[in-house]
Image (tube, rainbow, N blue to C red; front, side, top):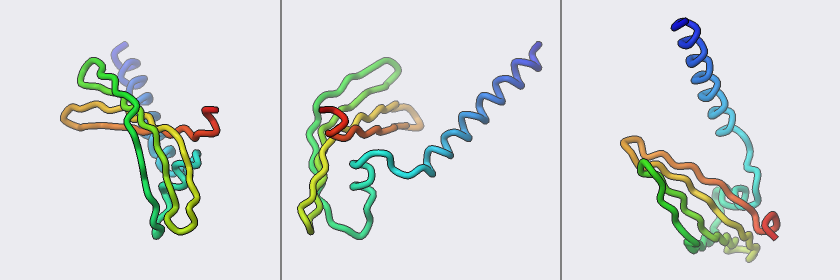
Length: 104
């Protein structure tokens, strides 16, 4: 019975690791990610913290309003970022972006 549990948990762990590698190689899905990922261009990044919620086990969620402006042509993108943090010895964090047009 222990062997079944060991095989099951090792399969789950390997699947989770594989899916994380796939996520890193995917192209940006939102306009904010596309705009902020442009290299070799000057853009102005403005943000304002909307709120922070602290959770159990040194976790927190930070919500920010974001505005990116291209310094050359003045094009702007607006949206919200949601960052989930776990502050332990590894200090992990993940950020998700929501475009303004998806909100309204």
